[in-house]
Length: 266
Ligand SMILES: NC(=O)c1ccc[n+]([C@@H]2O[C@H](COP(=O)([O-])OP(=O)(O)OC[C@H]3O[C@@H](n4cnc5c(N)ncnc54)[C@H](OP(=O)(O)O)[C@@H]3O)[C@@H](O)[C@H]2O)c1
Image (tube, rainbow, N blue to C red; front, side, top):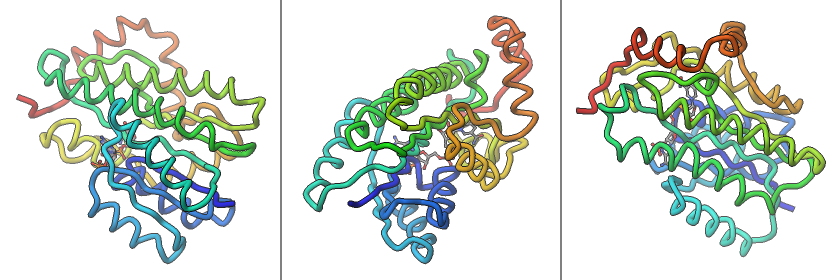
C-alpha cells in the first residue's frame, strides 16, 4: 500500500523545511511525499533539493484557498486513486499567511483570502484526508503563538490562528480513539518569507526570527509523540502561558498601541 505525506505551503519557509526533514527521516513510513503550493518553480526546486534523500516526490501547484481550493484538493485525492490505493501517513497543513497593520488599513479582500486559507482550507483538508487516515497517521496544523491572544495590528491573523489551535485540539480529542494524532504547531517569529508577504514588501525579514530548521525538527519530534500543542523555545512557552493572565482586550489594546507592524498595503 502506498503511504503518503502531504505538505502544504511547501514552496518556501517552514513548509519547505518540513519537506527537507521528512525526506531525510529514516523513521518515516511514507513511500511518497506530495508538495502543495501555488508557485510551481519553487516547488520544483524543493523537489530537486530533496530527491537525493527521497526520490518519490510529487509537486502539486494549486491554490488551496477557500471552498474552491478544498474542492480542487479533493479532486486530486480522488484522481490519485486511479494510480492505486493509498493511505495518508501525515498531513502537514502549513500553508498560510498574515497581514501586518490595523484592520481598517488592510484590504478587506486580503483579510478574507486569509480566512479562506488559514481556516477554510485548513479545515477542508483535514476533512478531505479523513477517509485516507489509518491508525498511526498524523496531522500537523500550523497555528501560531498569535493564537493565544487577540492582537492589535494583526487582528484577523491572530483570530485565524486561534481558530486553527482550537480546531486542532478538538479534532485531536475526536480522533484519539482511532489512534490518529493531531498537533498544532504554535511558533513565534521564524525566519521565512512571512514578514515580506504580511507587510506587502515593507519588511523583508521576520523580526527576531528563529531558525526554521530547529522549529520544524522540534515539531516533528513532538508530533511523533502525540504532543497536542507544540511550542519550541522557552520564551514561546512562557508567552503562551502568561497570555492566560492578560485580559483579552488589554492584550489587543496594548499590541495595537505599542506593536506597530510596518506595511505597504495602501
Ligand atoms: N514565520 C513566522 O514567523 C510564523 C510564525 C507563526 C506561524 N507561522 C505560520 O507558518 C506557516 C508557514 O509560513 P512561513 O512562515 O513558512 O511563510 P512563507 O515562507 O511565506 O510560506 C507560506 C507558504 O504558504 C504557501 N501559500 C500561500 N498561499 C497559498 C495558497 N493560496 N495556496 C497554497 N499555498 C499557499 C506559500 O506558497 P505559494 O506562494 O507558492 O503558494 C508558501 O509555501 C503559515 O501558516 C504561517 O501562518 C509563521
